[in-house]
Amino acid sequence: MVTVIVPGFDVAAYAVEALDSLRAQTLPRWTAVLVDDASTDATGEIFDAAAAADRRFHVVRHPERLGLGAARNTGLDLVRTPFVAFLDADDRYTPRALERLVGTVAASGSDVALGAYVRLRPDTAGGYTAGEVQPWVAAATAPARTGTTLAHHPEASGNIVAWSKVSRMDLWRRAGLRFPVGKAYEDQIVAQQLYTRARSFDVIPDVVVEWRERADGSSITQHRSELPVLRDYLEALGGGIAVLDAAGEARAAASRVRLILAMDLPPLIDLAKNHPDDAYRRALGVFVRDVSSRVNGDGPTGPAATALAAARLW
Image 1 (cartoon, rainbow, N blue to C red):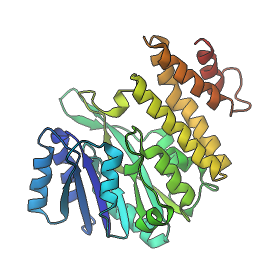
Image 2 (image 1 turned 120 degrees about the vertical axis):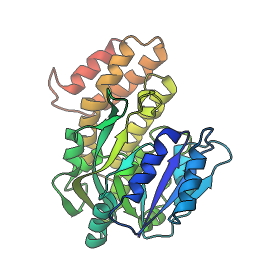
Image 3 (image 1 turned 180 degrees about the vertical axis):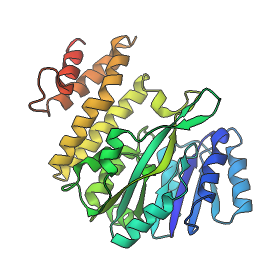
């Protein structure tokens, strides 16, 4: 019923857990495309072993590293099932993830189903512990809804990750959707395209994915102090808002702006205060001023006013 696209680059330390979480699914009718993005560690061998032991796994290799967006696109080209899902090879599904996501969208006729997720953080025992569902995640996915749209549920726009969803391949094909290549945070724009081009979507409050924050600091979200990563991040944030604007989804765009001001910008502003590169502060300042200009009635101590006051210092 569903193809799960699992891209991986040098994730040998985590890939077994990711694949085990697929094997443990209560919905057995899945297949998986494992895309090895020219790994230099044992990721490819782990993928090969999985395919040798279970015919539901299929391995594709990039001869050179092309990035996460390209790896997901490679997987998309090979999907022959009605539904598609994504799981990064350093994360893991909860056991009923596919059952719940595929089940709700198959029953409702919607184009997309999205669920909640939690972060896996390093613990003192040398492993990882799952956290709680964060408020913005809950706002996007609770309570359960079927056959909804952004006009009725604008907070769904806050769920901007690829791997918390199942969607119909028919939607990807008729909308011509692809992931941006060579960019970090490549799923943010695609998420808004899925919402705005879907006939309807479903949300479930179930935690479907545990998203890993790597102990070695190699996750892309842990590199926002680097100027190229910041630029990709801001481009993705702004691009997602632009998709909502172009679709006439004013309430969803406003919801997304409020969330960016409250959640995304404060840690970036803290990084910028003592950043050694003026270009970092300038890039962030331009974005802050643009986003803050969209908010009315924020008040002198609200998120927009606070962010704008910081940007003016640069």
